[in-house]
Length: 286
Image (tube, rainbow, N blue to C red; front, side, top):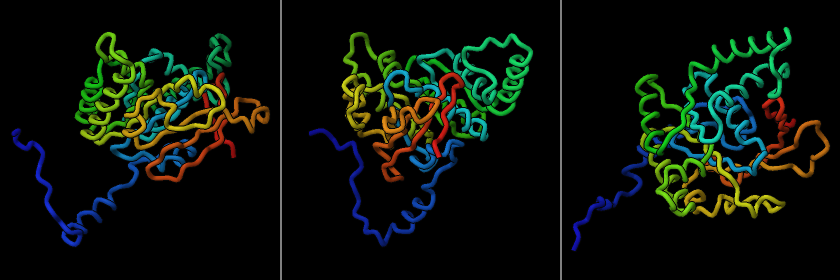
């Protein structure tokens, strides 16, 4: 018979540990908030040791939304590690500069006119002073690399970073053994991300693709996450960025909804948004 390797549970009635539990309850609060109110309304802010999945079909703007959220966190003075497996870092910085220009530039602009050059330089200076000191872009080979970067950040800054990952399926398949089943690779990746999250007390926001069967008009559900059950059970929150069919045509920009289909601290709800892709920015619909 194999020896027991897990601790033997001890019987403790609540009157003996209530004060401990009350202390933990008082500490269970967000360490920061987003500067994007729809995210706060759906998630309740940024909580330690929490993983949030953000799913969307291609072209919905999920990378742009992640950049906007990450920039806001960095500008508040909290360090950010942005793991980018799809776009190079300079492309993400470009999105940030266009958004910081507040409509003066678009992603297609080449700043050659005097006005465009002035707007670009002003955006660069704002990015340099507000965001750049607290954001690091990285491409990794394994989830263990993310853990190492989080540890380095805590050592260097004395603060636990918020981690953004774009996106789950690319990270999972790159880190998996050759010819591994994709769903098994995703399950393994999520399990490792949860371990990093719990070990360092960081908050993670992870972009996920959507199963093709949900590309149409099916209502959002946790089944959209590529069939990987670990995503469904391991993430504390799950958001779905999708077309708002009821408001299509009512706005000059794409009408979208950010819908919570799993939320640890909030009731499930939706936030109406518009996506201005040319200016790399999301706006809340009031």
